[in-house]
Image (cartoon, rainbow, N blue to C red; front, side, top):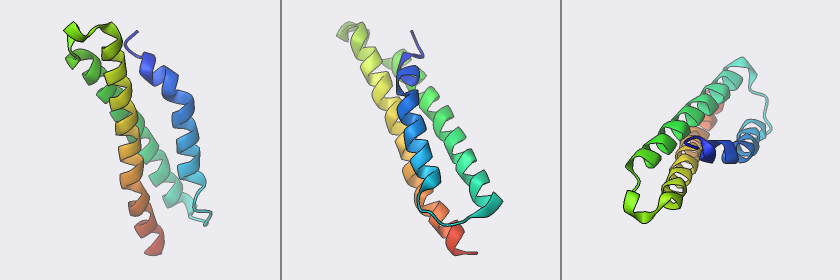
Length: 97
């Protein structure tokens, strides 16, 4: 049950990850692909960590569903946060070449 939020969000993470890798449609080469894959790996690991933290630190008196809600929000926020931070970094990387 602990990994439910990541399992349920995995298809959406795949869609957001595909958008991150496909846009902008400029050729980037191996460095760009490596940066994108590393970004997605860090985003997924951070998302799992945030989800586990949310389940562990959720208020037990609020009921079991709210631990899952907190875990899901934290996992989604961590994933999007990494992607949003990496987006301008990738642009700077592409601009420097």
